[in-house]
Image 1 (cartoon, rainbow, N blue to C red):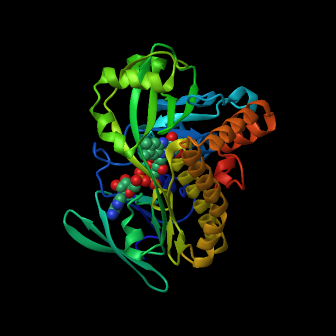
Image 2 (cartoon, rainbow, N blue to C red):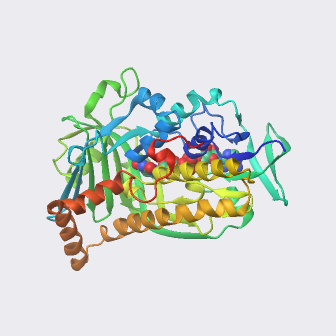
Image 3 (spheres, rainbow, N blue to C red):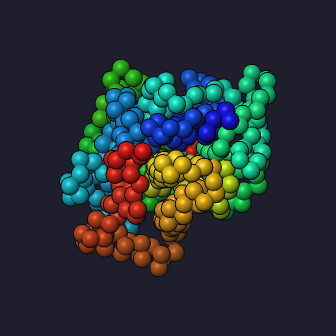
Length: 417
Ligand SMILES: Cc1cc2nc3c(=O)[nH]c(=O)nc-3n(C[C@H](O)[C@H](O)[C@H](O)COP(=O)(O)OP(=O)(O)OC[C@H]3O[C@@H](n4cnc5c(N)ncnc54)[C@H](O)[C@@H]3O)c2cc1C
């Protein structure tokens, strides 16, 4: 057997799993198609990722938080939620929850560099890159994976294949995994913007008739691009309807900033500068069965959610923490890590979290894009209720921090093995 586990996809989720398994006596191969230093590496761009408090704990427990923090993260100390043109607002605060921060913002590229900085120190793991997954076959006691490296194909054998190959997973296609897929007719436009006021660690979530907008504090470290903008730098995720995308991308900076100011209002100050914009089409996608014998799906290969509540990578990191724990326990018992009964334990554990996040993000994306009067009144009453009822607000804050449900050992700061 070449490896115990082959992780296909070295994005943020696949690379995190290699780190999470570092204490477990398993030989790991991590296969990534795109050279890691390449600008085109899809998982590690400048998109701002809101990391829940629970995700910080997982990154800390797997030994990469320090490197990520040194490269640049911005704590979220307050979250302000509002509904454009209506009365409802609610605020969550770290001090009320007794934590240092409700979450943190780090760019995907920063998380990626943090993960790769110490990859060489993982003695049990080998990075096979650039190498692309091409095919796989399952036998009773192993899986055979065909990869292509520099135009040549070779076979690798392992006990378990972990599909971490993202939203367009070829592994999912290859095995014919059933997918639940819904479109929103919405696209996220992302950009970094500069305001005349410091962000003060406040994240804004604003619901508008075309879809939600998020404005996240994102101070770039000194000496890096945007470093001179200090704490006036923020990251914007502006959801627009698909038919508006071409028009929005054509606006020059002045028109973009003017329209942004009108939609967002003055709560974050005046918008002064904007970086070039990128567009990400949005949808909801869940693999119906995230495991089969010798195969488990994690991260975007298993699920894609609307970025309205910044949940996608957080959900993927919880996949990592749970799968690592299930595999560590299997090894401890002398059980086959690729056995279906072990993998079913992972799928069962993850299901309630999947359902909760799917319902929450889908509900927020649809209800808050709806101008039907009863829906407007109901959601605004919901926001007011959150504002005036501390227990409801506390529950929302715990969920935003990724601290509800059955927490795996890594999310409690404990070693996995
Ligand atoms: C606009 C936007 C904002 C977001 N904001 C947040 C946020 O605030 N908080 C949050 O938690 N999440 C957020 N997300 C979601 C988050 O970006 C994703 O959940 C996360 O990047 C998924 O990581 P992944 O490693 O699963 O997938 P990917 O990043 O897609 O990585 C997959 C990897 O597999 C590799 N690969 C693919 N095919 C092959 C193959 N055949 N062979 C070998 N390798 C292969 C790819 O090269 C890639 O490196 C946001 C998403 C968007 C679009």
